[in-house]
Length: 121
Image (cartoon, rainbow, N blue to C red):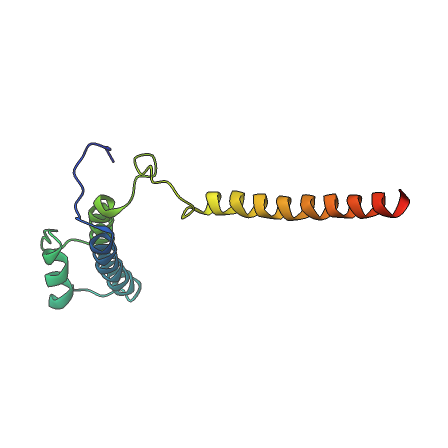
């Protein structure tokens, strides 16, 4: 995904909404494929076409799944292009929690050392 390419969505809520719809389609197609269905139900076909995917007669469920995956690509976040700051990323939260833990432990060690000095001196 090119960082300069325009997004297919206007905001985070819209992005998530489209991803959920496409995930629902993927689940429906996977169930049909596992059930070895012979035809694509009209309701599923209509939902696929609503997402901008053309369904040709005789297209396999595997191929339709690939087409839905391709459609999902434009709603996925490119982590290299997404340079948001803050602790919402797992790595940042882990580092921050280690800092807090280290400060707590080091603080406790310093307090214990001061108590020992008072008692001996």
